[in-house]
Every structure is written in C-alpha cells, then in structure tokens.
Length: 65
Image (cartoon, rainbow, N blue to C red):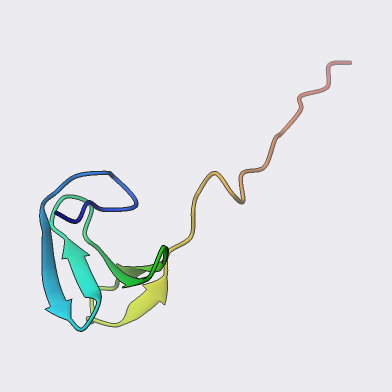
C-alpha cells in the first residue's frame, strides 16, 4: 500500500500513471522508483511544486538595546 510522502497517511488515490493524490494533506505526488516529486493543488486545479516550509525557514534574532 502507498503512503503519502508528506503526511505519512494511507488515504491515497491513484489519478494517473504513477501519479497519486493524498486526501489528508491534499497534495499530488509522482513516484519514480525510490524518488518522488510532490505538488500542491491550487484552487484553479493547477499543480505547483510543493515547497517544504522548513526548508526556507528564516531564523530571526531580536537584539535588545
């Protein structure tokens, strides 16, 4: 059984050849062997590459004085 690479849940449906949709976190992903690409589904139905929010996190430092 296939699990979602983002949330780890099994509520995944097949939407195309090696293309799947997770009903829990609402992302589509394409599996190719051991690698995968994850896409966000926009309101108009287009797919954009999923961006990991922790990957681009900015560490802000507050300076006193």
